[in-house]
Each structure stands twice: as C-alpha cells, then as structure tokens.
Length: 233
Image 1 (spheres, one colour):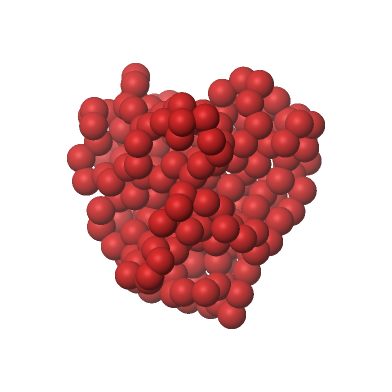
Image 2 (cartoon, rainbow, N blue to C red):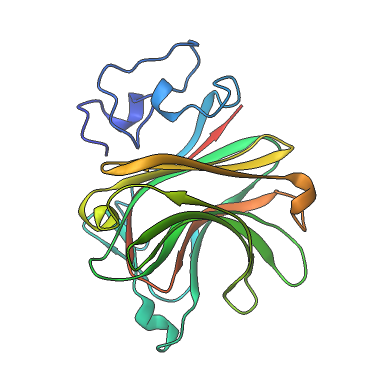
C-alpha cells in the first residue's frame, strides 16, 4: 500500500515507504513507524488498506465512502454545517498504543483531518483527536477533545504551528502518528513540503481515559485516507 515494493503482509511499516525495512531494535515494527522512544511500540496489531467497500469492522458517521482504495469523507453529509466526521475501527484498545495514517485534503478547502482515539463508555461520548488544520495560509497541528454526541470539536487542548507550504496536504500524502504511553498523548505530523511537527498533552489535561476505539476524523473539509494502522507494545 505504501509503494515501497514490499508486500503489506511482510512489510514492517506497511503505511510508510521503507524499501530497506530498517529496524534498529529488531522488533516487529520498522524504524519508519516507531514512536518516541523507539521501545514504545513493537508490534503491528492492525493494518487497513481500505480495499473493500464498505470496509468491514468500521463504524462510520454519514459521509464516508470507499473509492479506489481510499476512504474519503465528503462534508456534504453535514447539511452545509461544520461538523466532525468520524470512522472508528470496532476493536477497542487499552494501555500503550499507536495509530497511524496517510491522508490528503481536497484542493482549496480549509478544515482539518487526522486521527482519533479514546472513544470509550463516557456520557456524553468523548474522544480525542490529532488534527492537521489548514486555515487560509496557515497550517497547525492541534489536539482536540471531541464531543461525539453533537459531532463537535468541543475544546482545543494544544496547538503547534506547522511550517511549510499550506497547499502541500492537497498535493502530497501527509503522515500522522498518534501515540499514548499511559501518561502522555503525543501527535506527530510530517510529509513532503511541511515541517515535522509534534504536539502532546499529559493525562491530567484529558477529561477521560485513553481507552476504547481508535480511528479517523475530519472537520469541515473533504479528505482522503490511504490507510490506517494500529501498533502495540
């Protein structure tokens, strides 16, 4: 799926091109997909290339379609209002984990896209997302608390400026990794023509535990996702 010439079934980082399969610590996860520190994540628990329509084992809000091996969100499903579109894999996680995706925005649209996790049993349902946001000529990496009851972003917990070309997310696939080490939620985004950027928040800044379902999230734009991976210790 990452065009590096290595079949997904034996690729140690199936969502990011790494034709040499570099693996400094000798675990099941290649250097290109490691968290920080590299010992945090060691196994590939799930890889979804979105080859089937609809993708099995996914719970998606209205507006998601599978087209040519990508999962796409079309904001017209929100009736012309800004809203959060989510697609969660049905399996839940607890403890240390990482999730990763490659994605693009549609040209000429502001909005945000990325990863979401921590969708558990809280009332109202809450999750936390890492979002690459584009507003005019600015790019930011944001961590949001999401209220899934009304499809809103709810509250931004952290933000960092992303350097580079604001058109890049519409021209090249960008990569995002979300990790939870039991104490800190870390978001990282990188890709062609944008700066490698991180944002993180401690457990005390979250209103509920980082346990439950993980997946993809889009705010007020159209975005395509090439894949989704989940890693464990």
